[in-house]
Length: 160
Image (cartoon, rainbow, N blue to C red; front, side, top):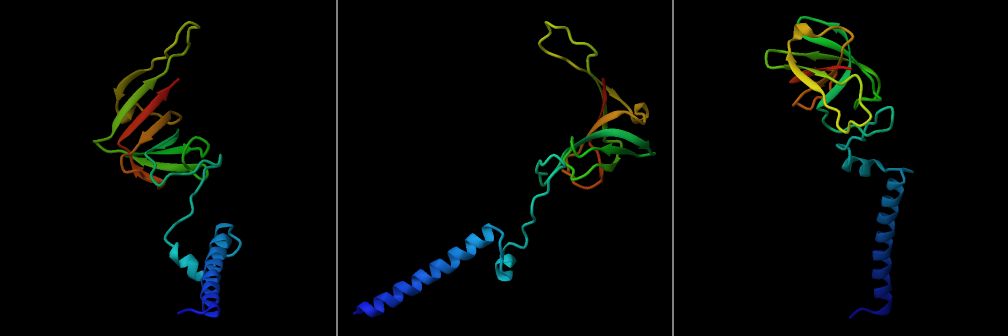
């Protein structure tokens, strides 16, 4: 049978354990101090990255847009801004294409009538030879690339 003294000792030990672990959790959540052993538990977790506008960059990115600066035999160099892409900073992307890459010309209407409720765009297939430096493009990849060099599944040339 437990005496009052033994019960107080057990309750004190349990309370001390709760206070210690609760304090460690609070301190680490406030980022005041994180013990090394606590950090090892979460070392595989990488902190999220953000665009210049403060938007969190997802783990996989399937589309980028920008302006073509250079054209090679099987690639385009595209200037992509961080404000309109999932990028930490403005970047020059190397977008490769092959025989499987689809090229589309996407033409937006020049003027919109006041009573018009839906704006339609005209799309037509094109080839890589129809693409020029200075064109605004949207590139898509099914691989979800976050690198600065990847092969595109589709390249859409946007004409305003």
